[in-house]
Image (cartoon, rainbow, N blue to C red):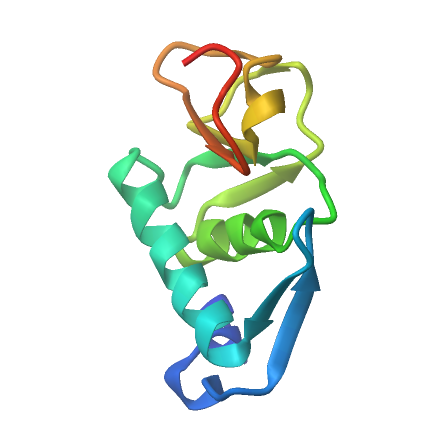
Length: 120
């Protein structure tokens, strides 16, 4: 049986291309991809995400959306893809220009990437 941790384990780290895409055609080697997935999990944990949490992920072609899904899975939480505009979850991850368009339940945290938020 495999887990999310197996997908981004230390033995998978190398300089081969793991993922590319996003607004700036980001290229992630397996080393960078695995490291960033674990860092994403750490940030989400600091925001209060835990095993019983739900994290909304705004769908984009940017690898950061995939990293948010993996980071959520590493914590044992549930990733909700394409969350509703009124979202009842612990965190919402998406482009900084879009996360402000969502109404979150009390205690919900927004995590934006790719620029400054419209309303900090």
